[in-house]
Amino acid sequence: MCGIVGLVGQKNNVVEAVVYGLEGLEYRGYDSAGIACTDSGDTKIICAKACGELSALKAQLHEQPISGLAAIGHTRWATHGRVTLENVHPHFDCSGTIALVHNGIIENYHELGTMLKAEGHIFKSDTDSEVVAHLLESILDRGLSPKKALHELVSRLDGAYALVIMLGGRSDELLFVRKRSPLCLGLGKNKSAVVSDLVAFDADIEKYAIIPDQTYGFLRMGEVEAYSFDGFSAEITYTPHIHNASSRDRGGHAHYMLKEIYEQKGIVHRIVTALNDLGDEWIKGLGYTSASQASESLKKLTHVDLIACGTSYYAASLGAFFLRDIAGIDTSVTRASEFAYNPILMKNRLYGVVSQSGETADTLEVLRALKRQEQSVFGIVNVEKSSMAREADGFFAMHAGPEISVASTKSFTAQVVVFYWLALKIAHSKGLITLQQLQASEAELLWCGNKIEETLENNKSSIEHDAAWFAQYKTCLFLGRQESFILAAEAALKLKELAYIFVEAFPSGELKHGPLALVDQNMPVVVFSSADPLVYQKIVSNAQEVKARGGRLVVFGFQDQTALLNLAEKSYCVSGFSSYTQCDSLLGPLCMVAAMHYLVYSIAKVLERPIDKPRNLAKSVTVE
Ligand code: G6P
Image (tube, rainbow, N blue to C red; front, side):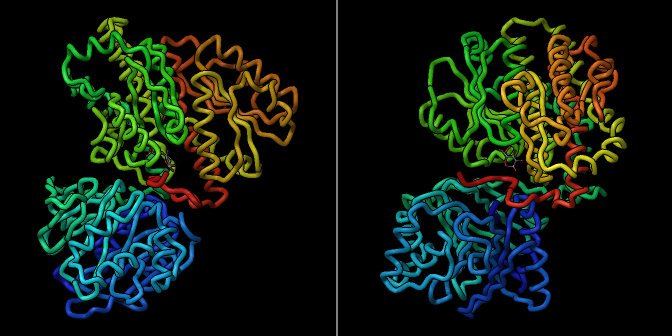
């Protein structure tokens, strides 16, 4: 979603560095971009804006270069107002001497806008953000200092916002404000920066700090002046910054998504090793402070509530199977946007938020609401410096590495692995399994980790061949049972977001209760099989029902499941894992996941979709 980069430099020109920062933020999803800059002594603020890809803005800057000692830039993902040049940030006041970029939502923008229009302010955009520029203008016009003006500004804005503000001619400083939306400061060689995501920093930044919530202040060369919303000095704590330029390249692959699909190889090993390295400290991930507290609490723990959005929701749904079946804990999973309305808070419950970014607004707001009610909340999070990682009582890092493509692939796999490991650890600590059983199960997890890429490679050429066949259909039905239904649902989400094909996922037992009416020779039906022998038998019966109606049956199955595989027009098989293998059938989806991702990727490629940045979507959804 929207991204912010603000820079104060020594060299005239910081515009290139802002563009570099915006390139780092591209992965979050955006539909337009803009930059403004100013020079010392010149009250003019110069601006360049373009709709569409950042390349359009870069082309414009190439044609008509702009330069200054301070600059602010923004990638916009439309919420208030369509994708038009007028709505692109930075936004200005009437005099053109205040420019600002904004992430989040100003909830009282309508009331403020009405009041400011009555005062004579002229608005140029449909955004909520522009209101802030005019409000600040009206406050400064009363002769207040910038510090006093910011103090009043924050008292009059409702909602969540990260703001970076430039005053014409003040090239030595930028103003910043943070309430709920993320914002970070960076200090380094020849420049100081304020950005909404650490990936926007370049190699010159030597140390960084997450701005505390409800803080405003001033960023200058090599220094920061910060105040909490109540006006007292705010403490800023810095961490050394290590720039990781390689996370920005595609590693020789055509798309980030393909790079990330391939990164799933070895991910299981890496995660299990890192989690085991926690030793006895693992209980801190659940928010417990001592082994005795953990052991007491885990014995009493009756229920875990998992909360997540999108792909993380499906990973959590598999996690619920693991926690129930392995650790004996009744577990429910709720979409964060729904949870907010109906939380039943009870004793001896543990809440878990699951998120790649750690910044998804719906999930973050649930976490904060639970914390306000003094509930225990743990996280499973990829971005270790994210808000969720900081605000939960404890968290488990997913160790998936930066994920750039909007659609989550490797982070799904990483979340599933963390959940499986966690279920084993809880089961062991509750005395449900012995240490030997725990180690044997971990070995099964690692064995399945090796199957991820093997299954992809074994089926790669059939998938590439079949992609064009899938691409001709406008609708599809995906089926599974138990754990394989979760994979079907995640696959359906992937195909919708990447190929724009309408897919409905159903537990295959529900087929006869409705979806079967849709099945004819024009309906591809993709069945995700289970390695559990009993579940498998039922899936075969459902596949027969599809076949009998002329449906175009496609199967993701396991070796030896010949009855099912023979029914299929097209099939993709996990070798060496049959219904009779001594391996937990709950791990079946893990073996299939990369092949499923590659099928979706290949279909989207045939359809020439913008694979890494699907239309209308964003990587990190930071508004509710
Ligand atoms: C967006 C992304 C999805 C992701 C979801 C949840 O919708 O496009 O890929 O699964 O957000 O994100 P999170 O960072 O909380 O896992």
